[in-house]
Length: 120
Image (cartoon, rainbow, N blue to C red; front, side, top):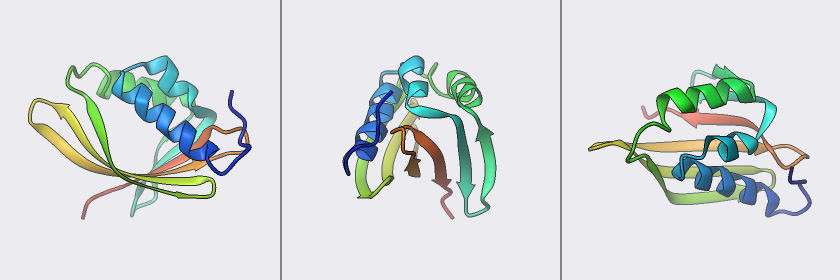
């Protein structure tokens, strides 16, 4: 597991999970997250997932089976241990969405929390 040792470590783990997402590599994707990861939706602050196993199950059933799945990074902001990504996500066929995710990386260099920002 990577250890947070420089200002770029947070960006590296977020990029690694994006690369694994685009490769639909569930094992590599889940390995980027802390065992007790929390996933939230903004602005409601509703917690939608808790734990690496729940995250892996969600992405296996909801995303990784889609043959055209791809997230193109539009913009990234790195602020210490937090990374904010704005992505253009192709789901299936013409079904696309814009996604904003805020990642919080822990001292072990793993993603400990994610906030997905809903479009208003």
